[in-house]
Length: 501
Image (cartoon, rainbow, N blue to C red; front, side, top):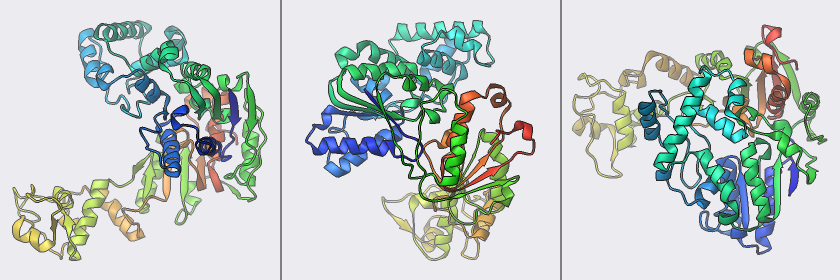
């Protein structure tokens, strides 16, 4: 085993992908190479890059380019019917008289699951298994609003339910893989594991199992960016590996002033692998402000981060009032269906044709009161790929709205807040279908991202103030190192609730 430590912007993932390409270029069979990533995004990137350069089939040739969960799922020859689904949790709830209904379990299939459920009690049970710690110890370390009796009762009932029905959850998959790795895991000439600082103790067991089946295994990560300890990550395991190591020494992202600030934060981290790396040859800017209203975001790309999601809500409201298009935690500030309807209506007014799905979207925002669209005419009957213009809709499909009606007159079912926001967007000249220049995110939600302009709020939650320590320093280290050019630090009104930066 060999380690690569990749400080922010040094290209550790690119290094691994280049090594993959070199191996393929030297005629190593792609089936003899495994590229395993913590996230589906990283695994897919490696897959697509190798496929494009060497004209390989994404699925058949690059079978071992996937997440750890996906590897276990496939090598164990599982199918969806083998795994716990929402219906099973609902049934378990009824059987034990304890509400365990879940809305989300995570993805399944070729790029199998990354999570467990959205229920806090089940998440706690899963976390203890990922960390390989007694459940009672994990319970004592949390502030979950359940008694120990409830936690223990549900944990035992959950295990019994799965056992009697022959079902598995996602952590069971990992445990089974470790137990049976010698029999089910093929041998590899090369194995790569990315984002190693985010692996849990159970996932590290998989890495060690893979090491015994690989001629060469490389792990890459950065312990200074290990911000998922709350989800079971064990960066100490990465730091303490008894093997060779190389630190990538040149950042291609971070300017000098941001690098100096990041170095000061890194020095506060007690348990870390010592690293020295160079910034890019650009000075950059570092600006400290007391209000984000002093930041001009009318041009360029922006990434705005805070420790907690609720801290971003006032800013989101302000951006809407100013008519900015933005993205928050991966969701656009304007509903896609709504923007589609507004654009579609304006296309009709301009004499252009639109598709049937666009017409249906437009009609969904119109009252059936004999003014905008006739009652009973909202359901279109159409042939595949059929296009409609305004005259056709008025003649044959019940449209009563006319060209003299602008979008908010015709689409009268748009709620007033959204109507006001659309008006502000149009006044600013924002294009609805454009990729937003401004992104709002928690620091945890933007790991791996970057932007030419970064705004970082220093406000802390009460929990962060109580716990602090290395996890807090690592989080703000990740925050400042998303910067390509300009970093803006927003000081809180109450300095006692601020990270000292």
